[in-house]
Image (tube, rainbow, N blue to C red; front, side):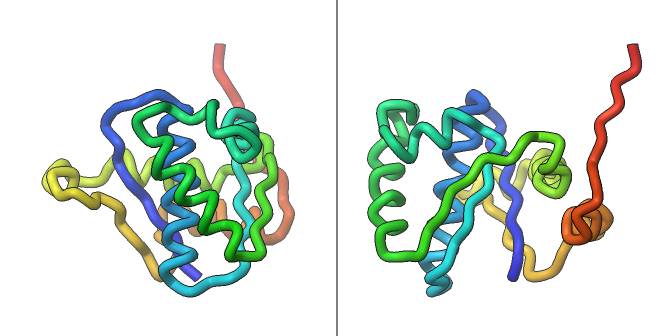
Amino acid sequence: MGCFAKNLCFGSSLFAESLRAMNAIEIAYNKGWTNLWLETDSTLVMLAFKSSSFVPWNIRNRWKNCIDLTKQMNFIVSHIFREGNCCADSLANIGLSINSLVLMSINSLVWMNDIPSQARADFFRNRLDLPCFRFVNF
């Protein structure tokens, strides 16, 4: 159906994960999609759906508005371990590479109707339920 990437340039991981969830909810709502399953590797974002006190104060109002949007949808949020989230990591890397000129606009979100080439292999591995391993050199 599509995917998006966004370069935040700043903020904590909770801030980034919260913004990513809000963007997904707002996009789904604006496109008229009534079914949304949000997978996140952030335990804090999972907890934020139960209590908005986990959300940074400067985006809390927007978060509450997104929670209201989810009440108009068939909405599910679930946790996925980071190792199972390779496709999202590829999209995050695309977000990091977004040109700084795009960042100067108010909405630096880049929507893609097709799977970007950088994420294609990870998408199909995920689609086929193949494992995703991370190896670290010491």
